[in-house]
Amino acid sequence: MKETNEQFKSVKADIAEIESGELNGVAEFLRALRANKEIADIILRIGQLEEKMKNFVHAIKIINITYTSKLGPEDGKESGALEGRKLTFNKHKKDSVIRIGYTDNFRVIGERKACRWEIKVDGKSCPSGKLVYDRHDGNNSNVRTSNHVIGYCENLPKGNHTIKVWVGPRPGNDRYKKSNCDTGWAKSRWTLEVMEIANMNP
Image (cartoon, rainbow, N blue to C red):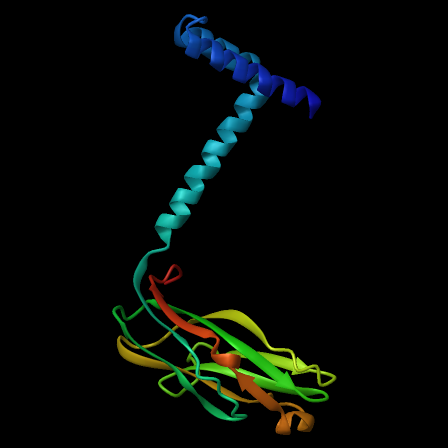
């Protein structure tokens, strides 16, 4: 590593000489660069990586973005659709994929209690798999934290759709049936975002 650092310093010195006119033209610069082959290889690899990243970004085609973001209201219900958490969007392409992002403040309180939040489309679970997010409390900790979750929903038909967020006790354990759930403490900001992207795996 020490040798590499010295080589890098040498390349910088050569470039400085070119800029000051002390080296005569490109040929001298190329000879100086070839003399520091290890640094030249690193520069080449960086260039190749940048090209791959450009190709990757171009491959992700964003068709449309729709969002809503508000302050509150806080919703303390243990079951049902959350108040205000609603977003209507238009899906432009039949075979596109919907990326859904949701930010809010979540809390569960109780001894070994758990709540589940689910993002639903048109009142139903996403057809390619439920977008569910669970939170558990083991010892009445009453911790309220803001979190961001994302999910991908496929096989939605083209046209208008409405997203809502539902809350309820996490299934699978009788202890969870009377869990105390809370969403949007102190009217903190929540956000729902839909990004329609081209299907990269048609």
